[in-house]
Image (cartoon, rainbow, N blue to C red):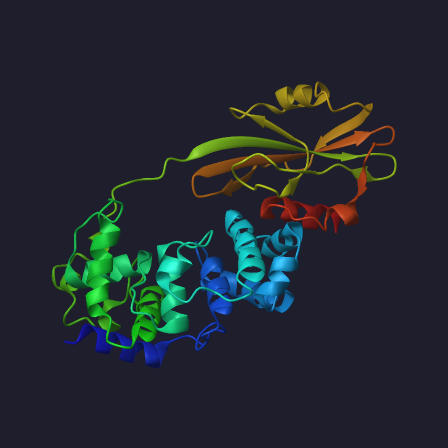
Length: 346
């Protein structure tokens, strides 16, 4: 069986109608690839449509403020993607006169563009014969060819890239790369793929050897850190509150939040109440403290599990530099805080 020919034929018959498909505009391709990193198409598509409406070219994106970009990104997570996207847009617009580099090697020099994204842009926009290697490609090739290389190992990317490169048909890098990504998304899925309807069910080695569930091999496990967040939602006599920007490195950099008390372990409500009363920044007299959510909100990130409580701290007098709720809600927040705002304030 000709693997590449069969794969492309499957793709042409089964591909989804997506707005970045059949498009050679590197800006559109770049946006879609960055947005779909760590994000399912169903989740990313509405963001992509709103984003391209707000920033139809790289110049609009470059001229927007970072806060505006982060607000449009709010809810997608992995916010470093948005910050890098914005910085790269400014470089392309102001240093390269709006013209994207045309080759894989040159694209790699841009901030936030790694090997996978550079390969996708170079092949989709310019049909450069360079393979995309992501989780879909690892999964498909390891199963079809029964490759037991640990995909978490340092040699895996090179090995799978070499294999994929051999499979790319001459002058069809664009459609082949689209096809293998789509096949991994729709057919050769991570868990319980329906091999009975697969176009490769007579030639896939993993299926023949009953190893589909065991491939690809991945030995490393992400170590998960638990963090305990208590957010203080202040309100004064004028119904104003306080928010601030997270400037420290780490999660949610440059997004906004309420004043935060973070503890190393899950503390009792009595301990948290005492901590709130002893905060240096609580200069006004506290009238009342109430817990908004007796049930802890658990928010899972790739390497961290956040355990979050929101506390309403009612003050007797006026907050200096306080902000009304409607104005505050326009700033970019982590989605867990934004969802709280939507539920409580509106």
